[in-house]
Every structure is written in C-alpha cells, then in structure tokens.
Image (cartoon, rainbow, N blue to C red; front, side, top):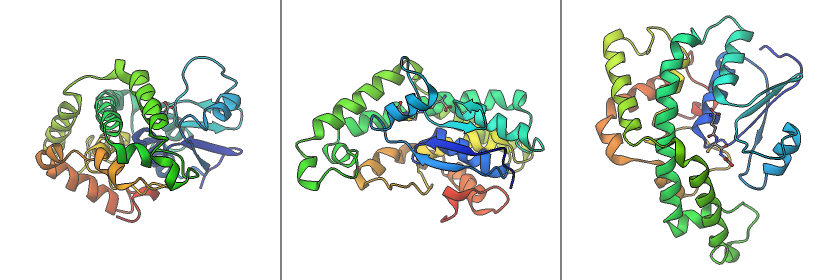
Length: 250
Ligand SMILES: N[C@@H](CCC(=O)N[C@@H](CS)C(=O)NCC(=O)O)C(=O)O
C-alpha cells in the first residue's frame, strides 16, 4: 500500500463521483482515510478546509500532503501518476470520462427529481439524527435541499446522454472482445461501470439509503435494455483484480 503523508478523501458514499475516486485510489493501492460528507451540514467544514468561502463546492475532494484534488478525474489521475500508470493512458480515457460525466449528470437530474416528488424519499434524505416523528413536518427542508441541488447541476444535463454512453460501451466491449473498454482494465472501465450505479446500483453505501431513495436510483427501463452491461459490471465487481471495497459484498 502506498501513502504520501496523511491522505483524506471526503465524499458521499452513494455518489457515483465518489465511487469513481474510491475505486481508482484502491486500484492504485493508495492508503487514505475516508470521511462521509452530508449535503448542507458538512458544507461549512469543507469550505473551511478548502479555504473557499464563495462559489460552489463539490465532493469528492482528496487531500494529500499539501495538495488538494477537487474532482474524481483529478483524483484518479493523481492515483495513476503516483503508481505505475495501471489505470491507463488518461489522454485516451478522457473521451470515456466525458461520456461518463454527461451520463451521470443526466442520471443525477433524474434521481434528484424523483426524490423531490416522493414524500418517503424526502423523509429518508433528512440526516440520521432527525427523530422519526419530526421527519414528516421537516420534509420541506429536504425538498428545499434537493431543489437547490437540481438547480446547481441542471446546466450539465444532456437528455439522452445516459443511453448514448451505454450504447457506446456495449459497442466497444464487442469490438475489443474483452471485458475491458481499452482491452485491459483501466479507468475507462471504472468511468463507464459507475454509470450503471444510476441504473441498478450494487455498491455498499454507508449510511445506507432508505427504500424509497433506493428506488429513485434504479431505472428499470434502462436496466432491462442494458442487462448485458449490468452483467459486465457485476463481473468486474466479482473479480478480485478489478473490484474495490464498495463492491466486496457482491
Ligand atoms: N466533476 C465533479 C463532480 C462532483 C459532483 O457532482 N459531486 C456532487 C455529487 S452528487 C456533490 O458534491 N453534491 C453535493 C453538493 O453539491 O452539495 C467530480 O468529478 O468529482
């Protein structure tokens, strides 16, 4: 295991962007502490760490020594460069990461709107310390938070991006005749497999999501259309060489 000083990853365990970063760091055997970010509640602490008082902040953020990496792509690139380049050629992978980012942006808009329109999911999205009897009257706070999230990221939404990314992944896997987008396991596989976490998620999340929220993360229509890709993602998750900790229970 490699470590350069104390490393800390702050992320949301349910978020595909955090999953990308964790998967990449673990593939590169980088040791780090992990801290869960709770939207709104953790924001001030993160701003303090980043010394950033205005503008938007997002997770994952990775702190290592005096350096800070502020998105999944930068974190993965750092991991790759700190080791033996085992995640592949990032110039080549950029195309796949762009497809993945567009797909995730569309998927997030779907999830956030589903939660906003589901009373149970709104109650589930309140922090763990809120007592059961207070959840119903406090739904409006949860609705306000998800509406703000929707607004924050709406400009990234490209309708059809998810399906396009999945179609392209299917094509390239057929072309390479392997389970790997570039012929050998790379960050391109991580980027594309994580898209399926907004179709039929399998990663272990802590804290776990409630049942209504879980159903918002599922898209049964895309799941049925891309059953072959779900099986592909499950094969990566089951193989020791390509799996990571959030997939270990698969
Ligand atoms: N391009 C960034 C995107 C990260 C991102 O969108 N993070 C979202 C995950 S849902 C986030 O931080 N949400 C919490 C918030 O905005 O308060 C990356 O690759 O890490």
